[in-house]
Length: 189
Image (cartoon, rainbow, N blue to C red; front, side, top):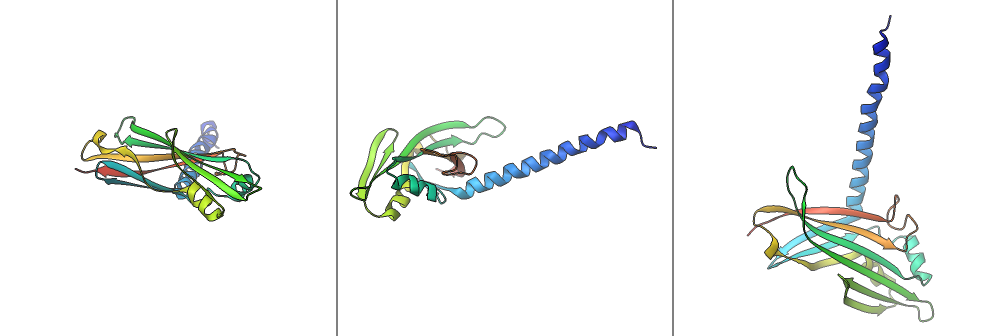
């Protein structure tokens, strides 16, 4: 004969299994985000240079929105954070990089521009869609932060969050309109 308590413990065993499944799903989503957005921080002279690439950012939906003449903006929030064990990490600095493209159907040219923290950084006009794709999704050694605020022999990381406007819910990421990733480094002096 089974004890009444033995029968009641079966649902209790399902809860840990459900938590394991949720943890695995979260880890899978996190790994997919890391693949979607690759970040490389580099310390050179008195700057933290940040390179990042969003490999899957220029989707067919993005391309269609651009070719329709709709101004499309990818906004990247870049944070430099101090890794603090057993405590909340501290944000050392933050920068917002916004890349926009507007396609003119009459001239068949793309006007692209980059703004960093609300200031115009660069702009150009091109007919080449490959240039637009690279411009919107790849960044090489942007000098976003100064090293004078960093402490020697400490662990830091750069976190990049990306959002597209306008969004249809799947323009960059199947579960929403944005993605994020981070990369760690140790500041040595």
